Length: 382
Image (tube, rainbow, N blue to C red; front, side, top):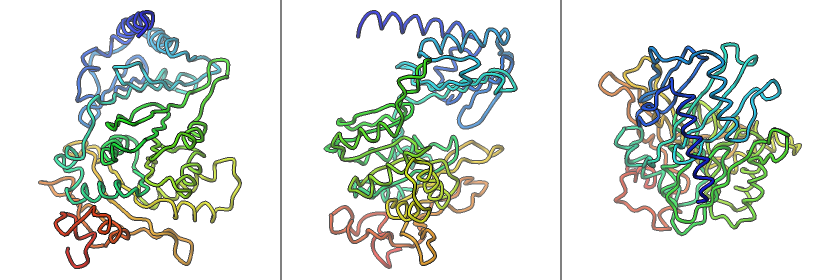
């Protein structure tokens, strides 16, 4: 690496530690802390092990000190915060792997608000999810088979439910022989496969030029000979590009979407497709979504006040087109039981449904009668 870049990064880290000193450097190094939330100069919260806690005795000298901190950060990432630029979203340089969002008054009535999300340098694995009871062994095996079979998969959930971590864990089932194109607003995924190309969107420069959107990168990716396309999250009209790529032969795509149930995930994808520049009737968007998406993995975060702030898979559902009334046909393959005091998260159990691609999985040699999730592939083997 160029020495000037190294020096610039070193200076940046020193100034960041100085300006954000009230937060405390130990919090950035603490692996149990996943979020640092600054609500004006006098309120600092952290999320530790899924639970929010307010830091006592930690504050900035005043609004000016906090503004100096965020301006220092904005300058480093070539952004601007002023009356014409009310917010900023930026990824900090390696190796920190932090994403920072800042919003300033008057849009924020409580003062300058800073949200710092930390991404683990360690990849969360399927085995770790099973050990944490976020996922059952049967469900884990089923999802790995589905990924190998190039099923199009959406991870759905609310904010902070672990959608990106789940997507990263599921991607481990992709063959190392495949060429994977990853497209994100801010780079968060950390795939282990050797042939992975990561593309990152870019906001406009202070003068308004240079903006590169997810949609722009998606068009680029289709010309890059992908075996898989993984989109970190669909938020806008790029949903239509993703759906149409699935329908045109790019099987095995994966992405995440904000939604609180499998049915709402499909409805949201439909709505996002309608937000593209392409004009189409609602039923066309619905038909395309129903035809493209095979599986939805629904994530849930335990309610505040629970024994812990754990995240877990609450359902795995298969999409089987539309019914005679043009409604999505959704078959739950796994559902989570109601929690108990000794098991607050409940258990993720198979519903008894046979997945629609069972015969293909057997014929391809991906599953046999010794599989622990055989109930999803062999009738009468519950």
